[in-house]
Image 1: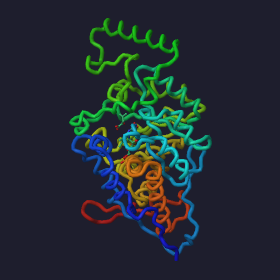
Image 2: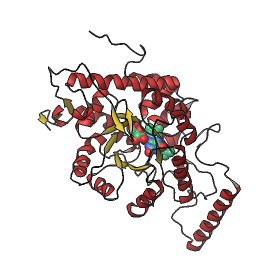
Image 3: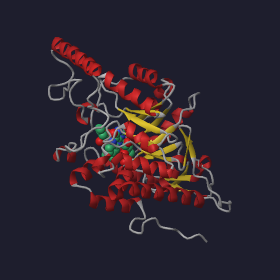
Image 4: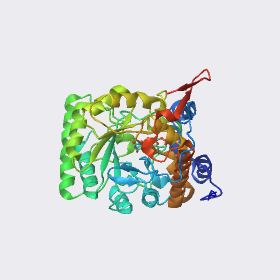
Length: 408
Ligand SMILES: Cc1cc2nc3c(=O)[nH]c(=O)nc-3n(C[C@H](O)[C@H](O)[C@H](O)COP(=O)(O)O)c2cc1C
Ligand SMILES: CC(C)CC(=O)C(=O)O
C-alpha cells in the first residue's frame, strides 16, 4: 500500500494554506486579495456551490496508472488546471510573479499573467522559459496605442495566448479596498506600463494626449468625469485603466484578433451566460473562461459552477468546437473533477496561488500546486477514471434544495 507523503506537515490543504498565508500578509494586502464585491455572496457561493454536487464513483477498474495531464496551448500540462492571472503579486512576496512563474515551470502548469503585474511580462516569460506557454491577461484600454504596444510585446516575448477580461466595464465595489484606501505601495510599480519609452514613442503619446484634450474640450462633456480622467501620457493605474465601459463585441474582438492572430490565441475571460458564449463563438474567439472574477465584480451573479452547464450546452449547440474553461472558488481536487464532469475542459485557480506565494514564495506556490495535483489524482483514482477526458456527467449527482439527489 502506498503511503501518503506530505509535502509540508503544517499545510495539508488549501484551507490551511489560506490560514497560514493570512498570518503573513499585511492587512491591506490580505483585504485586497481575499475580498469579494459588496457583501461577498457571490464570492462565498463560488465555493459553496460545489457542495451541491456529489461524485458517483465506479469500482473494480484498474486505476494503477492515472494520467492527469491535458494539452493546452500546445503544451502538455501536468493537471487540468492553470494559475489564473492575479494582479500585483509582489504585494504577497518580494519575488512576486517571478516566484509564481518558476513554480509553474517546475510543476508543469500554465500561468496566466495579469496586465497589472508587478514584474514585466518579458521577465516573467524569461522565468517560464521558451517551452512553457504563457497567457497574458488583457484589459483593453480606451487608448489603443497602449494596448497595441502591450500585445506586440507579448507576441515578441513568446506568449501563446491573450485573455481579454470582459467582466470589468466598471470596477466592482470592494468596500475594504475603499476603506483601506488601497493603492500600490511606492516601492512597487505596474511593471508593464509607465515605462519611459523612446523619444518617438513619447512624441506619439503626446500627440494622442493633445488630440484627446481637444476632443474633450470640443464635446465639453466627455464620458469621464474629471476625477476619473487620466490622459494617455499620465500614469496608468488599475483604478484608472482596468475598467473600460466602451468595450463592444463588434469593434473590439475583431480588432484584438487582428492584433494577435495567428501567433497568439484570443480568449475571452468573464463569460457568464449561454448567450454571450454563443456570441464569443460567432466572433471567432479561440476559447472562453467562465468567470465572475472571483466574486470581485458583480455581487449577486451566479456562482461559476452554476453558470457552467448553460454555457457548455450553448457551446455544444454550435458547429465550431470552442473550449470552455472555468474559474472561481476551486479549492479541492474534487472541485476540479466536478467542473470537468459538468463539461469544462480546464480550470484556473486565483487566490490559492496568492496564498502559496504569501506563505513561502516559490516553494509556497509549488506546495499549492502539489496539493491540488495530489487531490486530483486521488479523486480520479477513487472515482474510477484514469484519463481526464473520461470524466463526464455520469460521475456526478446533484443534491437539490429539498435534499433529494438527482442524476445529471
Ligand atoms: C487579488 C486578485 C487580483 C486579480 N487580478 C485580476 C486581473 O488583474 N485580471 C483578471 O482578469 N482577473 C483578475 N483576478 C481574477 C482571477 O483571474 C480569477 O478570475 C479569480 O481569482 C478566480 O477565483 P478564485 O480566486 O476563487 O480562484 C484577480 C483576482 C484576485 C483575487
Ligand atoms: C488590476 C485590477 C483591476 C485587478 C483585478 O482584476 C482585481 O483586483 O480583481
